[in-house]
Amino acid sequence: MTLRLHDRVAIVTGAAGGLGRAIAARFAAEGADLCLADLLDLSEVVAAVQAAGRRAIGVQADVSDSAAVAAMVERARAEFGRVDVLVNLAGVGSHGASDDVTEDEWHRVLRCNLTSVFLCCQAVLPGMREQGYGRIINIGSLLAKNGGNPRPWLDAQEQKRAGNLAYGASKAGVHALTLYLAKENAHLGITVNAVAPGPIGSNPRLLNVFPDSLKAQIPVGRLGRAEEVADAVAFLAGDQAGFVTGEVLDINGGSWCD
Ligand SMILES: NC(=O)c1ccc[n+]([C@@H]2O[C@H](COP(=O)([O-])OP(=O)(O)OC[C@H]3O[C@@H](n4cnc5c(N)ncnc54)[C@H](O)[C@@H]3O)[C@@H](O)[C@H]2O)c1
Image (cartoon, rainbow, N blue to C red; front, side):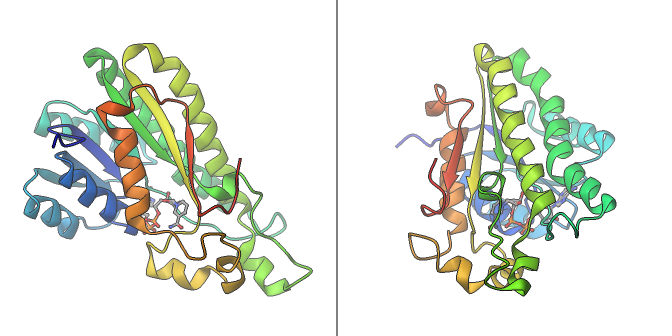
């Protein structure tokens, strides 16, 4: 059986998190070598990829900082010679409705979730154009599409946790950026897609954040699994997905159908 990512080189940002670990494991199983980036220590996830028989480096970097992003891409090229795949996964959550979100919080979330994606794409695209091949997968969100889950008439406290104004706006920006980059680069062998997960049980911290009433509304009847997101990302990262570009793929258990 041919591996989907045989000898491809991928950068995965936000790789120390729940989804990052699952994507790193899946990419390694599909034959990729990995440059893993995060603010946090990456030694565990690097060791897991190496134990699976692939090469991996960990780069501690703030991907909302252009100099750090340039250094990360340089490091990947120096180690592996090229970058075939970029997965923009690094991101932060944010709670609050319009009255609660401060200007500082707004800028923090936009910088971490949207500016970072722009900077990483801008840093890898020249090399991808030169080699005539590239796959970019951005992680968006259901919350960019559905206006969040506020139902203050049912539970005012739940409203506080269900409002995600800045987060939703940042991820909607990620979706739009994906479409623009897809069209700009479609004739150059480069695809740019997004996946938009609904609630995924990838992070023990988030498990307590998702209210039971929200879980109860998911038509499939459960939270998503990190491996299910990783599987979709691996498909979009593969050679076989060359005719798929500008797609925002929902992975939300039927929570929002469009
Ligand atoms: N888990 C879900 O339900 C869900 C749903 C929709 C979208 N998402 C998105 O998927 C992505 C990963 O989610 P997760 O569940 O693995 O979360 P997570 O918090 O476990 O992982 C996110 C990782 O990104 C890193 N990070 C944050 N800002 C960074 C920066 N500036 N530079 C470098 N690294 C940075 C964090 O250190 C963390 O390791 C996020 O973008 C999130 O918004 C998650």
